[in-house]
Length: 161
Image 1 (cartoon, one colour):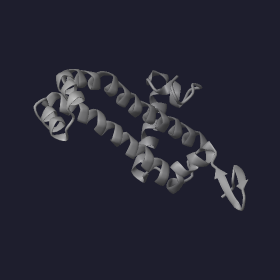
Image 2 (cartoon, helix red, strand yellow; image 1 turned 90 degrees about the horizontal axis):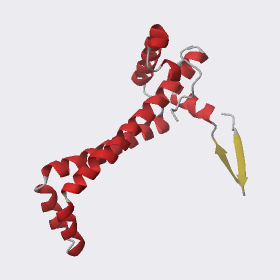
Image 3 (cartoon, helix red, strand yellow; image 1 turned 90 degrees about the vertical axis):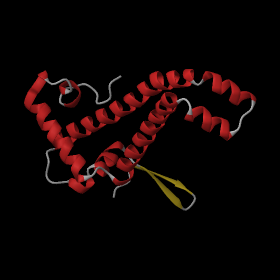
Image 4 (tube, one colour; image 1 turned 135 degrees about the horizontal axis):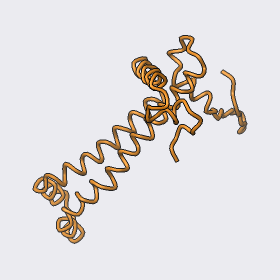
């Protein structure tokens, strides 16, 4: 493996990976002769998927979490005066919608963190690569009429700004 930017600290060499190496690691188990253009489009679609998942998590934290915390405001005032875990437990047990709202926010955040960490550490699964390839081919087939055409096949950057 070629190092893109090795740095020496004493006797240790620390390698800083480039985005090209990261991309090849995402698709490493599935190098089956795809064109570089298709690989790039699959990477862009994957980046859009990551941005979309984090967008949903952000939207949940901006809408559902404040509503849930607002319905717990009297319990939170009590917790600030006399904090016990029993008070937290009963506050959440007797405010089921608020507890479900907070659980959904935390659950989605942890879910996306685990999913993205798994993709970074072990690369994409063969099933996920096949799904990306299938979706890119569908986007290509529909052409500019597809909503993701500009970001996946066009000249726009992969992450919406």
